[in-house]
Image (cartoon, one colour):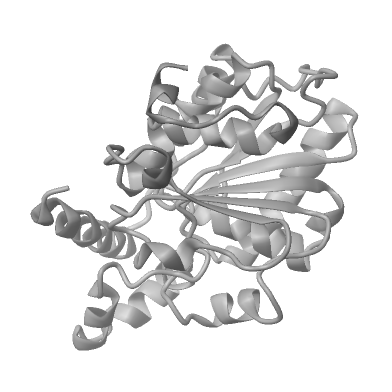
Length: 292
């Protein structure tokens, strides 16, 4: 990736975050119902879906920061549905008066929303456990649910695509907040989901104390060396039993996906997600997986 592109992504993220914090709240527009309808018509978020013997657990997709339950999954959700999975996705971390852009609320509160949603999915599908696949914040936040909100008893596997497991420095740009009077306090007040993901935050310190994993859950992390949002990229990797850390360039050296595209459109990453969900039927992930 060209250097200017690697810088532009983090700068745009910070500017968008600051814009959200200073924009006056307006009445929320009724976007949730059409979005849910679009997802259902595309084959996911169908609460009449029953898991098959081949794929006995529903898959819950957890979007990233500044995304939502539909746009983050226009690639991966149909990919999994076409392979016979019951697939569901939720919106979380909503701010009052801010439609479509979610994942900005406190991460502990977002984890509670995930807990409620997983219970709903399990009740509808009639099975005891789900698998979770998350992108960016969505790959990290479920760990709070697993560790502190009883999720370990209800989740078989967590697959994180470019997850912010130890937060991010945004290529060092988060340090600039200290030089902008009031900027960090404004972000903490208005968009806690962002400041919770700054490397060294109290939330992340609590989350990572005592080990990265909980017993009984299978963990997979899929990362790219070209990630310009969750940096350094190796901070995404977990340690502990039953963890598989995957660098996508180790599977396909010419894969140039960065943070967003890894979760949105990268079919090589999608193939590795499918392997993590069904390891007994896993096949090698290579550059040719883009055709699968």
